[in-house]
Length: 404
Image 1 (cartoon, helix red, strand yellow):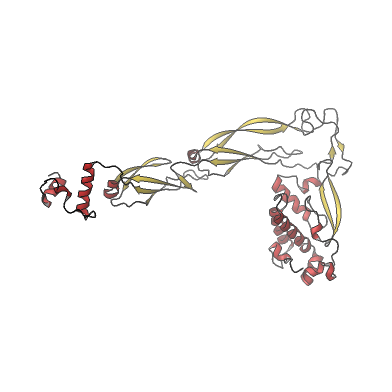
Image 2: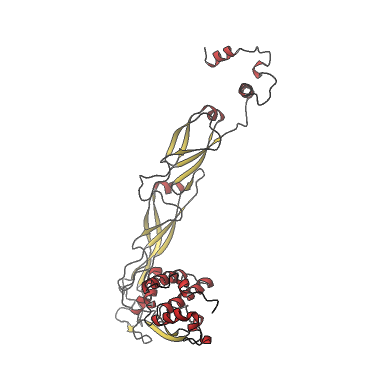
């Protein structure tokens, strides 16, 4: 028993937790770790069993009282505890859809399966004629980076099930009728008991013969082969809002699988895949890009034209701008899905271009600039005086620069 965790710790509740808190905690863990949600995941299955064992003990007032007094030893046959049988790990969880008894676990699993699979869980199996919501369908659409910014409309071709016109959704051949399932007696479920360390446990599952409907179709409709539905391809228009991001989904109501016994249809969930852009990058509602400026623009400043997702913007570069300087273009980012009038910002990193090809005159002019700016090239004389040129006075140079 030393390797077993405390049941309260397993459920993440305090020792004075009431029934509602226990049920809520267990329901969250069961939804997270149920084997149907995590197929093949042994660790998740083990955590599911651990949580179920903890809830089975703590939700029963008598067993909880024993556990609070004696701990795990209260249910260890080797310690003379009240439990017996093969142990909790011997319980079959793979087909688990609910426990009997007063613990309320059947209700919990009815809620869980309804959330996970669009209805029809344990509760639906107890009442085969009850309406159940249809399952959701999933599809994927690809759009460009700019379409995600501005919004667009796309069309999808999907296969949808519709009620069979021949049998009106019953699945029965016209002129015949359904028969009550002999295996489950029309209840849609079968149950069996198993002796465990916690006592006698009752496992309830859908009837394998009728699939939980409580009825058997002897003569199936030839149009739908007894399913009650026919499939057809349909073209659906999808309105993609401006500002949608890669991986987000759009819900289209009533375009999923049809419900049973008059239940509503499920929904169509369209996942949007946004392609990358060769200039812009996105992070949430903000846009990031690089923009090259010339050396004279960086030194002297001036107006430059910067592309954004909303068109070109004129920006005044400050004199002496250094490379990798980041500027902010407010409101030039991605619009909010909730409010298109609200936009993020566009951050531009300015890169000073270093020319790789210069004419001789340009090289001489650059050397002259360097000589006047501090002579970092260590020129022995003013490059402007080469080739027999007379050195000009400072006054003459000022006149030339001012065109006087």
